[in-house]
Length: 491
Image (cartoon, rainbow, N blue to C red; front, side):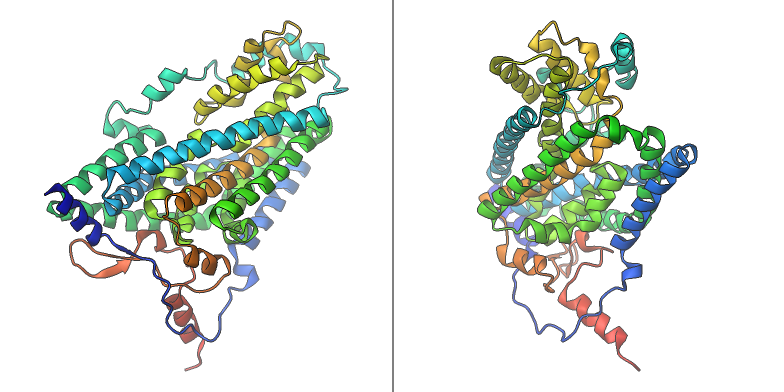
């Protein structure tokens, strides 16, 4: 009986992704360049850099613009994750399928983050970013206090504590405290229970579905403020930390960004081989979201839009809803790459040669500490402090971590870029691995061709309607193309 309920609910929530295109419109009305979000983001980022460099005090005072935009986005992240995961699992209606997706995602995360650590150590050994670095003894003398202030005297959770924290104290607290892993945990259980009940709860399913439409519409409005947020963030970063830090830490910054570029090329090969995705075309598809994340130094602000575009590009809702939020804690490729390079930077700056065994110890410690970094203030400093302590090399004091205080904020763009692309690649790979990637649709979308809108059957009215992910985002479908051309025709 339960089996029938699950199949009924799956039928009710069936999503149309067939690429049986009607006759496409003959032309395409492009948005003028001066109205493009991409253009305004570039202008905002450049203007922020100029303002921060020329008037640093004024630039530092623009931080509330970035903070306000980020808070608006974070206000909706938890409910959007909940709705997306619940609807995706209700569509799958199979606990085993959800388990497979989760296990495959964790296997992929562990493999790629471990490779990122090894890759960072290799680059650090070859480039030697800390060689010849002039260590200021005064920096080390006050280093412990500076690091404590940066991290608010916090500490990374231990493995058991981290795993236990995934279980929320209550469902309400998970949303109130914006704990994404806790929201994801509750959403998975809720979605599985809803699939089990089947068609006996159409009102609940309908409420979640309609709420999702509302939340995605709100995100569409808020994202129009993205250039303002990016402007404020860049003005603050440059005004607060200055262009001069680029000179002092030039070799370390260059090493990290070189490693990031090379690592992204590795990700491009992985996603091409295992999912058939052209990463450059996908980058062009998400360029607006990429520059929003780059400008605000936060991947969280684009989480809803990235989930939308991955679904639109052919990944199933269940895979996207499970992989992307989980990746924000378990798949921090950019952060792990940065940390492994910084361990070598600190040892080289102190004139200490780390043996292969000590570097392997550092890698093993970072494999554990990097998993609990998300949402912890100054987490990179805490992870590095724990790693230096574990290596146990007396010539490298833990206070040496303070050497990175001047460069850490400049590295945010590198970490954010790799983290964002890494999670997108993970979603494509897991979706293809699970057979939940519509490759025909993906190719059409990445080639810029119009595709049928993603639709589902309303559980209450039985009518076909757009998925909530398409609300207010202006994605290119055959219907939207036709409407644009009709509007452009003279009366």
